[in-house]
Length: 325
Image 1 (cartoon, rainbow, N blue to C red):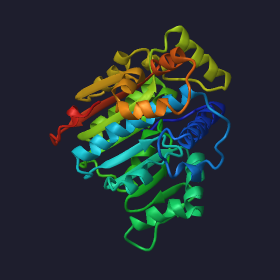
Image 2 (spheres, rainbow, N blue to C red):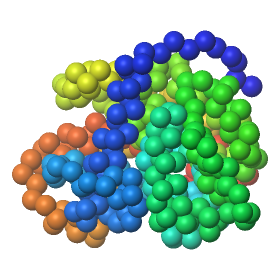
Image 3 (cartoon, rainbow, N blue to C red):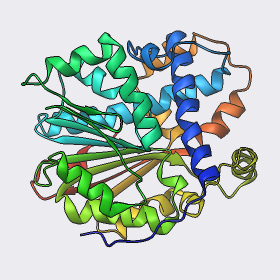
């Protein structure tokens, strides 16, 4: 059981972190409008396509989405969908709807984020039938639990919680019937980096202690101690966005060590340059024809400063350690 603690966080810093949710959603919306990948649901969360994004940004998001999805779908296949998914800091992510369309839904899909973001997402779902209909179709009774800060159906649940407040997170997941005995995938994309190393380590430790058969996929910055990394940090600081956990983003080894020291059995990490090179190359060739890329070196630098790290515990011997690229 996580211990109680007092929280004193900067509202300004948290607001800046919440703003990154919009950044990611707007970038994904633009990239899908250009045909990098298909997302039928992003338009319901971000109406306007917005100003043009640089080709290297679009390719970076393509690598991120395809890389994370590849690991997620492999987990669903290994578990035959007899599992749960928990998306930490989910923002306006549309993965639940993709999995429903592809008929590869887990037993239950949970999302966790700040209350203000959760309230916005629930409002979109309530007011837009293309979002609400799939929820109703996967729900067995007439009534969904729905208020401004939580939504709970048979297969999909949104929870408002601060990931730094583990006791509350744990209580809310229990309230909405998370099952620690089921294989469970935890997913975080550019989330842990905004927590202190101590906070994120406690979180991944709690997951390892609570879920005997689990996988954790973490996408975030890496190699942050060089010049390019320092520029990234300075750019975010100008927006009052403090990377509180940047010390664990120094290398692939430091990313892996966070999980190994928290009791995970096996951990892998690849920078996005490597992930990009291991994605299906026919599709990579297709997206590279969409826009001319003048600054190939800039794309390379960008991809070398993000990574995917995935950790597993496999009490049920499902072969989770074989999941990879």
